[in-house]
Length: 249
Ligand SMILES: Nc1ncnc2c1ncn2[C@@H]1O[C@H](COP(=O)(O)OP(=O)(O)O)[C@@H](O)[C@H]1O
Ligand SMILES: [Mg+2]
Image 1 (spheres, protein in one colour):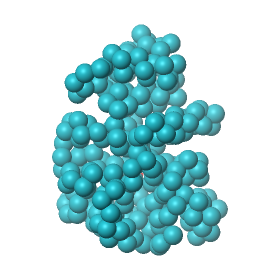
Image 2 (cartoon, helix red, strand yellow; image 1 turned 180 degrees about the vertical axis):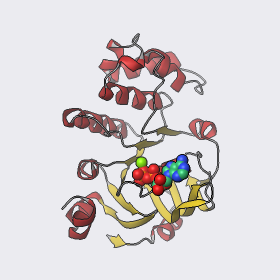
Image 3 (cartoon, helix red, strand yellow; image 1 turned 90 degrees about the horizontal axis):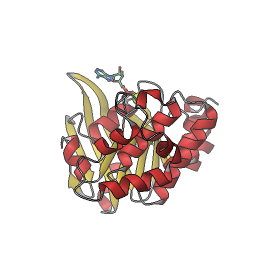
Image 4 (cartoon, protein in one colour; image 1 turned 135 degrees about the horizontal axis):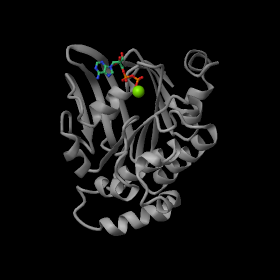
C-alpha cells in the first residue's frame, strides 16, 4: 500500500484501465473540493471509496459522471478523455450511476422506473427488463407498485436495477447501504457482487467501510478531497493507521 498517490503515473503506463481519474481538481461554484485527485478502476474490479463525511467521495462520482466538470486533470474511459462529457452521453458509452438519494422516481411504478432507465437503449429493452425481473424477484412481485410504496431496501434494489437496464461496463454507486438495516445491507452487497461477476466494473462509495472493502478488490481512502491511502482491500483493512483513523479502530 502507498500513502499518498502515484496512481496517475501507473495509470498512464497501462491501457487496461476501464476508468482513470488523474490529477483532478473539482468543486462547486468557486469552492474547490477535490485536490489533485487520482484513482483508477481496472476492468472487472470493484473499487471502494471510503472516508469521512464531506471527504469528497460523492464529488468524485459526480465529476466522473459529468455532473461536474473538473477544473483541471483528466478523466478517461477506456483511454478516451471524458471530462465534462454530459451524463446522457456517458450512459450511451457504458457508464451507469446510482446516486445516493433521489435515485428512483417515487410517483412512477417499478416497471416505469426500469423503462426510464432504458430510454437510451436502442434495442432489447423488453428482454433486458425481464432478465432483471429474473435476477431481482422482489421487483417482479412489485412491478406495478409505485416506487414510493417500496421499502428503503427495495428502492435501493430498484435504483440499482434501473442503472443495470443499460448493461453498463462501469457502474458508479454512491452509498448503496445508506440508511438500510444490517440484514438488507448484506443483500445489497450481494447484488453488487453478482453484477460484478457478470462483467460490470464498479466504483462504490461506502460509509460501511469494512463491509464495503470486504467485497472490493481495492480501495481508496479520501480525506479533504484527496487520496490519503490506497491499496488492496486487504491491505487497507489490515493497516492499523487506516483502521484507527477511518475504520473506527
Ligand atoms: N452541491 C453542492 N454545493 C456546494 N458544496 C457542496 C455540494 N455538494 C457537496 N458539497 C460540499 O463538498 C464537500 C464534499 O462533499 P461530498 O463529495 O458530498 O462528500 P462525501 O460524499 O465524501 O460525504 C462537502 O464539504 C460538501 O459540503
Ligand atoms: Mg457522499
